[in-house]
Length: 494
Ligand SMILES: Cc1cc2nc3c(=O)[nH]c(=O)nc-3n(C[C@H](O)[C@H](O)[C@H](O)COP(=O)(O)OP(=O)(O)OC[C@H]3O[C@@H](n4cnc5c(N)ncnc54)[C@H](O)[C@@H]3O)c2cc1C
Ligand code: FES
Ligand code: FES
Image (cartoon, rainbow, N blue to C red; front, side, top):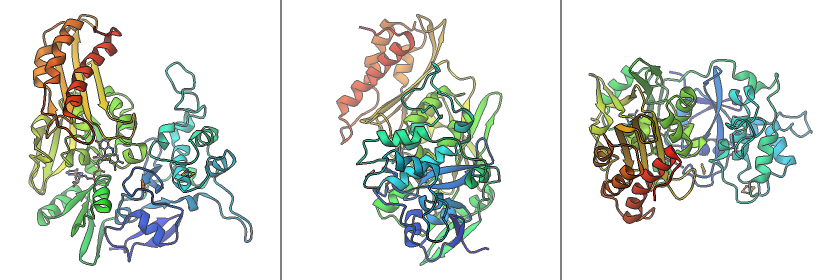
């Protein structure tokens, strides 16, 4: 087996002597690449953003920005990383380097003051700069055909920067820089790199000081390994695990990576369901589905930041079993099931039967979530209401997902089927069964909704915590149904 190494700014860099839990951030800084900064070490500030070459959605390779503070360096064995230092072109001896177009715009438009956040902004901005569909559609993107506040005339999606915080500039000059960048030049080496295959996942076996990071090449080998090592910690995008490592000092004797297993990275549309690989990142799912599952399309922008979504997977979101994860309410409303795999084979479990208690599930030791299946056809009326303190990049206090079939249209038609998923109101994500029953067979009118809202308010067993009180959570449930009615009919019930 080849010694573990990462290609950083074009130079092969051995992983040793880093520990298996060492983050990409510490790995880079320990090697003198101190442009990559640590702000929070928990995925919140983006100061540590770097670019990683990943399988592309529209081209063979995409440059994807990730939080270097969350990803173990060992997970990037055999991969290619670009830091802010690697974006500029070195000048002739004695002359300064030639800035990358993104760096140039940030400099001339005053996008950097103290500079602490700047390398992170630069990397997130560079990932968006190289996004092929931005370059292919540089026109304004809102429905009315004019520029909206969140997209530039150059197609730049400001949400690419939603995981980057700045204390100094007030953001306007940063936005100006983002909206000023053009398309990459033909000879731009990183633009050209997109045309070649992404680096293949390396089979990794990296041991240091008694702990091991393992990556197998196939799902079957991984499942056999998990049978032999039931103590192993599975890691995908590491957006949850990385926080555990950094903030709660979690150390595992054995970590097994599943994020590059091709069997868990497929997206297949069959006649009666869509199967989404559990190791696809949320960004990949969002871009591949391209709005074809409207409820998921509504979820993604509200889930963390682009930086987190570039790593986070559905398998990880369900794997934590968190009652405030954002995908479970949506997947419950879609009546999704999970495909669980172990060395003996597979079984399919409806998501409604998957969670058994606080962070508990029917998943057995050695079992992986291989995929999530969403049945077809989809309901016509769907909505996802995430109630949180901030509009973006925040954890839910309450989340409600609706999927309704209303026969005869949203104005007074009959609710034939109602599926409602709730998060943040019980020890597990739950289906809102009483409210579903209160709606089914009834006309979709203000009277029906006003009668069902108290039923929804009474669902679950919400609690008081630092995010919200139990009373607030219950109130938000009822409001959510009233909001859905208003959204579908544009009439607000009294
Ligand atoms: C700043 C920040 C913001 C966040 N915002 C949100 C948010 O808005 N909404 C939200 O829901 N979450 C949020 N999260 C949490 C996190 O991003 C998600 O839970 C994410 O989906 C985890 O996916 P991952 O691949 O990174 O999981 P990992 O961290 O790799 O793994 C998480 C857990 O799942 C297990 N696991 C991973 N893959 C599998 C699999 N295929 N089968 C079985 N078990 C598996 C792992 O063993 C581990 O216990 C946020 C996290 C951070 C750091
Ligand atoms: S250091 Fe803040 S997101 Fe990584
Ligand atoms: S320039 Fe100082 S934090 Fe952004």
